Amino acid sequence: MDREKMEKVEVSVKTTDPLGSSAEGLVVGVWDDGRMAQDFRKRLDAVLSGEVSRIIDNGEFKGASGDVLFLPTMGKLPTRYLILSGLGAKNKTSPESIRKLTGTVAKMARSRNLASLASTLLLNDAGDPENVSEAIVEGALLALYRFDHYKSDDGEKKGKGKKSSSAAKDFSSLTLYASRETEKKAKNGIEWARAIVRGTYLARDLGNHPANVATPTMIAQNASSEAKKRGIRFVSYDREKLEEMGLGALVGVAKGSMEPARLIQLEYRPAKAVNAKPVLLVGKTLTFDSGGISLKPAEKMETMKGDMSGGAAVLGTMMSIADLKIPLWVVGLMPATENMPSGTANKPGDVLRAFNGKTIEVINTDAEGRLILADALSWGVKNFDPALVIDLATLTGAVTVALGAHAIGVLGNDQKRMKEVLETGEKVGERGWQLPMFEEYFEQIKSPIADVQNVGGRGGGTITAAAFLSHFVDDKPWVHLDIAGTAWVESDEPYKPKGNVGIGIRLLTHYLDRLAQDKDLRKPEKRPSGKK
Ligand code: BES
Ligand code: MN
Ligand code: ZN
Image 1 (cartoon, helix red, strand yellow):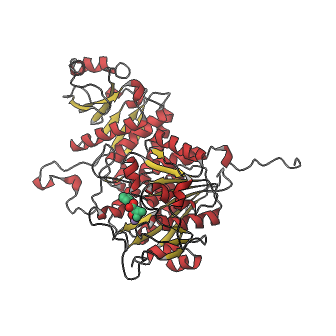
Image 2 (cartoon, rainbow, N blue to C red):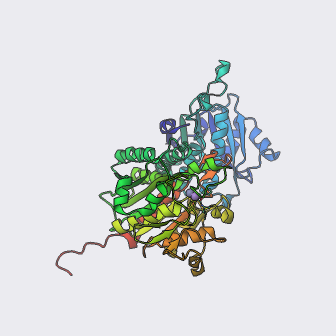
Image 3 (cartoon, helix red, strand yellow):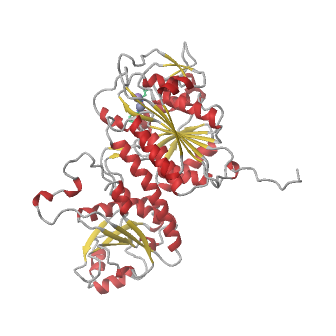
């Protein structure tokens, strides 16, 4: 489904008897020892002539994490399908395993044309109810995402040519069964999931739209309208202004392209913000990376329309923190441009001057992400004096060599903040892994003629890229997330359809919430007057 349909899905909590649910599918969690929540197994056996126990005892359904079995209820329960859903071993479930499980269930339900689901997974006591409820809703809604904007034959209406009644129904409702004690937390979890899913859907759309549509201008328009809905301050600097401001590295990358570049600035500053200095988010918004004069090979070049995923994550996060009213002052910067080869493009060997005055020798025009980030970072640091800087970028192919598609590369200059980001990632299922930044790596990017060069030669490509960025954050606490391996999936995963993942929004939204409770970031308490 698309964004509009996703918003229309009704997600609610009930505390009545789940076996009375009239949703078309009823999800019942089964542990790998065959146990279910409450007295469900006994009651289901009673209604379904012992079939559930036969299936489990016979080993047809093992309850391994991710196992799913749809059982038609033949009118013996109000629901049409009882959906046995494997939770695995009791101490091994996590919100992430539940997100995947529910994602799998939701897609199977869609293929059966079911429009409503009810889940009893909260009753399985598989973790903090708020996290579990968030995971259930995210799993379902993220899995049902589809990008069929350009299909003239609506992908969701496959088979409609037959003129049968098989036209797909839109998925319309998800009910979470909770206990009286967990009801409130379940509702909170739903609110979080909805905000995160909303941001993620937009980020996925921007990443899946081709580069002739998702241009810097189009992304700025989207950012502007989402900002307006939420009282986020929006500013967009165009090329002329960028030149005047001295963002020579961004302008340098942009000058090979006909598509006007932008620096998009979003500022969320709620009245109740607890921090005295903002948190600065910077996201690489490279709408198409051809490599420039250092042209990339043709194979898979089309996926380089997704080179704006860092910026999309910043936009999605700004939306979700505003929707959740997280009391934190946050500034988002999205340097947006194409990287194209042309007669006006940067050439290998050219020297650019970044906003902070440092000169950069462009050895390889395909290492353009760090150039546009150099300007956005140094400009953001100077103008906002942030308490913390976090950047996200599809920066290096090398991060995929190092970590594959299963972890974000985490680097930076502040061990405490990096550790916190890693912890949050583990908790919310967007994992990272830290890479070292030993001094030797900085040697690799020394230029014979300029302050720094934009590539570091063989070896440690993700690290030398981060070393390069460190020249542009002053001494500010800074965390860099290399999402080149995690922003895109080549085949369907439980809640990630092939294409853009919308990575980073869940991680950042939760991390910013954690920062809102951080003592070190808080404004100094106002002392009662008179006492000094
Ligand atoms: N956008 C790419 C990195 C990338 C590669 C993202 C694969 C997603 C998938 C980046 O601009 C780039 O081209 N990096 C070069 C750097 C090299 C020239 C030092 C790379 O990784 O090859
Ligand atoms: Mn590149
Ligand atoms: Zn790039």
